[in-house]
Every structure is written in C-alpha cells, then in structure tokens.
Image (cartoon, rainbow, N blue to C red; front, side, top):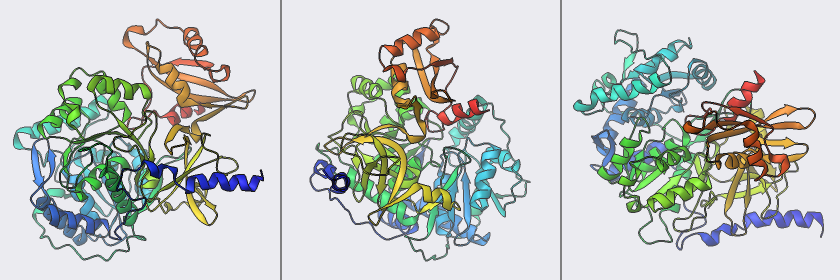
Length: 582
C-alpha cells in the first residue's frame, strides 16, 4: 500500500471519531458553546440560582446572591484601586470563600488572573509575579512573608485571614488548620499586623458599594487566566486561557456528565453537591470544580486541606453527590479505617484526574466500597478536562474518550505522523478549550503546536494508545520515556511493577544518563514501615526480572523516606532528575 495512502488512513481513523458510538443516547458530538465571558456566566448563575446555597465552608453557608454581592463590592474596590482591563492580578491562598470572591471580582474588573500555588516559596513566587507582570496581589496574611522576601514591587497588596468566613465557634479551628500545614512542612508562620501598608479584604468589601464597571469582553480573544505549568526544564510558563476557552471546557464537561448509560447517574444543574478540596489555584480544581460547579448551580463544600475526616463527614452531612479526587487520595482512602462509614453507592459519580490512576487502586476501591472510579484526563493547556469515561460504561485503565467538540489523535513523536489503532504515540488534541499558547514565550508555543492539513493541534507530551472502540490509555509523559540501548522504557510501567511488591509502598523511576547505554533505569523506593531494612537492592531487582523484560529492569535502586510529589499528589520525577544534575 502506498505510504501516503496509509498516512491518510491513519489520520482519518481519528478524524472519524470512533468514540462517538460510545456517547450516551442524546449526547451530541458537538454542543453549542455560548460566546460569553466568565463574568456573564457568573452573573447569570447568580440570577438563576439566587438564594440557593452556593458554598459551605466548615459549616458557614453563603448563597448565590450573597456571593454575587461580595463579588460586586470587591470588583468595585479593585477598580477604585486602579485595576483596569488587561491588568494582571495574582491570587495566593488556599481554598476559601475569599478565593472564589476575589477570582470573579478581578475578572469583573477586567483583570487577567494568575493563581499561585500556596506551597510555593519565594523563588517560585517571584518568577510567577514578574513573568506574568502582576501589579495587584490578593494573599492570605499568613503567606505574605514569602511575598515580601521576593522584593517584587506591587501597586496593590490585599490581605485576608483564613477565618473570615468561618462560623464563630470554628474560627480557632481555621487558624489551626492553616498553621498545621506549614508546621508539618517546616515553613515558618508569620502573621501581618494591620499597621502594614496594605489593604484588607474585608475592609474593602464593607466600605465599598456594589457598583462594578461594565467591561466589554471579546471572549475568544481576551485572556481570563494565566495558570503556570512546569516544563521539562527551566521555570514554569504561563498558559494563556481566554474566557471562551474556559466557558467551552465547562460547557462540554457538563454536557457530557448530563447523560449516562445508567438511570439516575447523570448530573443535573442546580441539584448536585461537590466536595471541593482540590486546590482552586490548580486548573483541575479551578475549572472542573469551582467554575463548572458555580455556573451549573451546584453546592460546593470547600476545604482548605484534604483532611480525610473532614471530607468523609461532609459526604454524609452535606449530601455530596459528585466527588472529584486525585489518585493519591484514593490510595489513602483505600487504607483508611473510616472510609467504609460513607455510603459511596449513593453518590452519582466518583471521578479521578490530575494523574494516572493505577489499576490496583481502582480495583481495590471497587472491592472495598462497591462503586467505580471514573478516570479522566486534563491539562492546563486545555482548560482542564478533555477525556472522561462515559457514565455507566467505563474501562479500567483507560482515561476515557474525548469530550464533545474535541478531536484527539496519536502521532509518532519523531515523524509527527498518525499511528495506527493500538500503537503508542503522543497524544494531540484540538478543540475550543485549547490554549492560545504560552505567555511571552513564542518559542515554547511553536514547539507545542503542529500544523497538519491546515489544522492546528496541541501536542500534549503524553504518550498513549487508543483501542478500536476509541478509548485512550495513558503510558507516560514523553519527557519521562527512558531510552536504554535503543529500547523504549516507560517509567510508569516499571513503577507499577515495583508497587506491586507487598513491601514497597511507593516508587518513582527515572533515567540516569550513561553514554554507554543511553540511560540506566533508576528506581527510588519507599518501603512499608515494617519492611525497612529487610529488603535488599538485589531482591528488588530479582523481583523485577520476573515481571519485566530484561531491558526494563532497574539497574539502580535507591531507598528513600519519601518520594517528591507535586501539590496535587503527582510523583515529581523532575525533582529526582534535578537531584542527579546537581
């Protein structure tokens, strides 16, 4: 067969979207996406849901009208402080009502938001503030010390206290929750006195009338947020997401979840309750939980930290129906003694994202609580979710099928030609939720996108395969692929084998450069508490030899007390590589 014909055949497989036959009846391949701003979507939600509870924060409830009033007051205050359309406003805080209020208020003032991880330290904060061009910062007082040490000049600093929206009986608890996080991480806690030359969140709301400006937006052109995402090397880069990008992602996710192969499992606007522990600064928690939840009239039960006791109690007390988590939380709950106290079968949907879900984690969860975890995939560059398993038709090990309005394909990373069904390739996507590119970084933008037959695709950097039914399966990040003597070794595959050992609790695998073989495979392992010092490197290597091809077996074993992770629970192989590089 002519090679050009074969290339076109492979390409057409994906363009024909074989996954559509697994869409529930009534779900369209393409849904209408309103060409509106996030500000309009929020205002519409306030008008539609009015006195319905919007958020619950450790017992304190605020309805949509109350939230809307505070947003309008704070937006007005920001404008009076000089914030105008296009200005950059940074949020540096844990999950709390103030985050949500500040987020929509800054947008209503016309600003572009950049959200900073609350576990970032001075160097990382400095980079994000300077690279984004932030002039106004909204920050929890207990974190402000890190900002001051950056010496970045800001026009406006607005501080807020974690306990401002806690019931009186829980104000002390709020302080304790926040302080305990930093004490455990050996981060000093510094509180700021009100004599500092800063503005205070509650003062601005109380002393400002709700008269926000009427900003005209071009949703497809105007940026809404600049989330920062790490690269393979160097400092994180800002992802340019427009109002339309985020509206698109929220719309297609809700459209997908509104249908199910099982009666009563579909999600309905105005009726669902979400446990909102996923960090709002992160695109997953920000778009899939905070924005989608509010726009759809859900009730958000907000937590500053993923404390399992608080989460489990809220599921019954607040009637949670939609639970979104990350693999590390499900692993914790699988072993947690109180997990069985929740009737998980009552929930409509239990979802996992932000990292690959191990098959064993999913199967152990189902055996223990009697319900399934539905896996999905999302990226900062795609405004969060792009793939999900259909409700009632999930495949273990798969991150699902593409959402409406989205086309996905797999290409050979070197030739950039589509690969046949069943073969591993780099995942590429196109759709209305895909970023415009990276902020002030045309080189990275150029490398992230490819043109094919007049169409622009985003190269995700994820290696995956698609089965004949259109379900996709994750293998590894392209940057984590290890080349040993010309063989391709997937770090995740080796990690899965290591973690199947009953005495190994955690594992992370990287390649250590070696000019003789390309890269040697190194495994960092954390032993179970009762097994430390009782398992040799040789024993681990021999265990792997029984389960892996010879070229996949680790050559180097390192015993560690912990594996470095990102703040959403992903193994940070980048940090392990940086340790080797010095």
